[in-house]
Length: 372
Ligand SMILES: Cc1cc2nc3c(=O)[nH]c(=O)nc-3n(C[C@H](O)[C@H](O)[C@H](O)COP(=O)(O)OP(=O)(O)OC[C@H]3O[C@@H](n4cnc5c(N)ncnc54)[C@H](O)[C@@H]3O)c2cc1C
Image 1 (tube, rainbow, N blue to C red):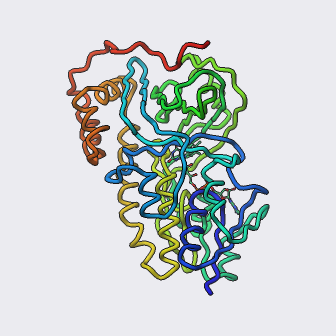
Image 2: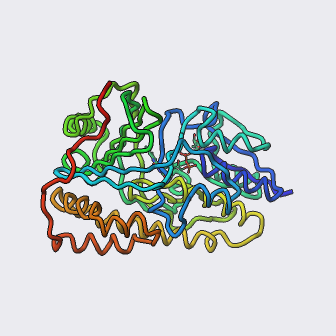
Image 3: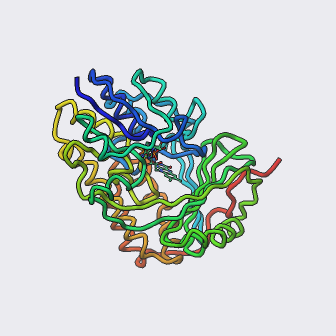
């Protein structure tokens, strides 16, 4: 029997464990915390647009990866706010809200509940040490440490993130995205609901010192009038980058550890879980890992390229972009056609200054239901 160690009980490591279990291999999972799930509760979005031609990511995970996952609900409305403009995009299902954290309903706990393999909790594992003991080691630590340790990490940027849980009245199917270089630089702000009474607020700003975050955060809340009671806040750093290789000897890098997260909005949940499943298949002798993940890497590179283009836009350009993405024809193509529109959005960005843009907003700048 193959001896496989998985480091990290996040979505990517657990997806890998489930696929190994399905293929008749029982891995051991090492997790540094005493419980499964992010210590801080959060809502992540599975955004359909990013991973087309996959039309529905939950359906794909169930059908092609044997990973049935329950979401908090569908994402039906995205409200995009730029400095002076606002666009509303609506569809039956633009994606899903997924619960992260330690509740039994969190993604991590849903996956863990289906496993019958041993967990070694409260243990910080080292890939190189385990590589001597096990036939295979899957590094799924959610950070770039294993890739750095192996000399395989190429850094793009260091993003400071502040998250908060807030109380108020929210539409459980609506997410707000905020693009304004004054408080986000070339990052973004996000408001995503847990339910009607609680939401998760986030500000991600690239290449600033963590201690500068207070000023950016205050400006974000003030500019967008996000005056909700805050239950808790937390800060973290996220290293955006890529792994130059994803396998070294018997060590495989999956999820964030393998750079399976696009710097465009930090979307990495879907690709991270897929990389975990593909690592399991490679371990079970069903293909070469680098080959199996090649389409995923191509897609991430395209999304990263889009990010680099967005980085060059100022607030006026972002106003134009948000306006254009809300135009009926473009909106239909981007959100409703089901086509892979990332190349189109690339083209749109390079033609921004040719658009007949007017600053007259079709909607008032509001992002919450009236407080009761
Ligand atoms: C604030 C924020 C918001 C995000 N929002 C979205 C979103 O809306 N949509 C989306 O698609 N993606 C989003 N992402 C990215 C997404 O969350 C990640 O891509 C996803 O969590 C990757 O899963 P993972 O299993 O690779 O890592 P993680 O979820 O980070 O899990 C890693 C696990 O490994 C454990 N661990 C770490 N080191 C060790 C060690 N040495 N030994 C043992 N255990 C260890 C950790 O405790 C953790 O349990 C967001 C990321 C951040 C930071």
